[in-house]
Image (cartoon, rainbow, N blue to C red):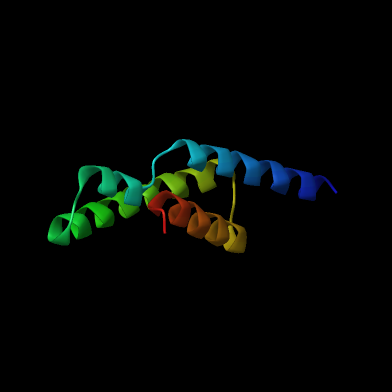
Length: 81
């Protein structure tokens, strides 16, 4: 039962953090980027998001499938995809 509660709290913490930050897509839209500039911006933004998500997963001491799942969702949320 404790594991379910901890998982729920982690999900809520991740959701609230991602809801407060602007996504890569929304930032690109605000800057009115297109073409090569958009591609370059999105690549860098997603790379930065992955690094931040990996750090967050490490802080939460996630490993294996839990880390993979967390990182995938975290990056997806940050990218706005």
